[in-house]
Length: 268
Ligand SMILES: NC(=O)c1ccc[n+]([C@@H]2O[C@H](COP(=O)([O-])OP(=O)(O)OC[C@H]3O[C@@H](n4cnc5c(N)ncnc54)[C@H](O)[C@@H]3O)[C@@H](O)[C@H]2O)c1
Image (cartoon, rainbow, N blue to C red):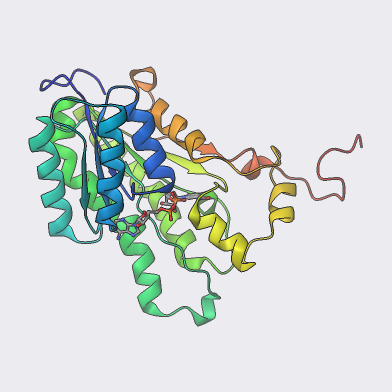
């Protein structure tokens, strides 16, 4: 955000923000004076987040929560225009809507493959594109959400990893193309975060908690607030010269080359 020429309250549009990382980010930014526009497939959940923020961090005109399927071009355009009307502009977009189905690649149906690409990749593109005219007017920014799946192949998540790898290309290309318009575009790449997406995998046995923690140098999951704080940095004026970056927030997972039996703690 730098120099919004409107209501004085900067406006951020967040997708997939009815819960998890998106909801934590909405809370983090609202606590710092932002108006949040919370979009989610779960409209009731989105409205609930906005109501909570209205109570805890009121802004003139209020926060807004609304149902929006990010893979629906017309719905995204409408929601973004509504956000711009409310805020007198848009200063930031956080594209976080996501799904995850775990299945062997050889058994993955086209519908599931397509859904991942539609939600993560096309959804991020549609949201950023719809907001561009207001972002360029405000010299605003976009933050996308990549993943360790942008760096690693992850068996049984081929569509997720392909979509998240695409997010990196989307982010870098928008950063290169929109930089001359004063719009910064960055990604965070979280490791494993304590949200429903990961909790469901642990509960179903698709993820092994012990192996996951042993593979993560900080030996724990991230909390959603920690991802929100990294996103908060990327949208802040302190990151005014940061664009095209993919910021790992993964407890060191993607830089750890440990393959010995000591989990990286042995002297030699
Ligand atoms: N949790 C993790 O460990 C982790 C790690 C790396 C990246 N991520 C990414 O972070 C983002 C948020 O994940 P989370 O962990 O908070 O997950 P989550 O499942 O808690 O939240 C995802 C939200 O996206 C919404 N959503 C799904 N499809 C949508 C659509 N078509 N339109 C609008 N909203 C839709 C869901 O309703 C849900 O509220 C996702 O892009 C995810 O891939 C998560």
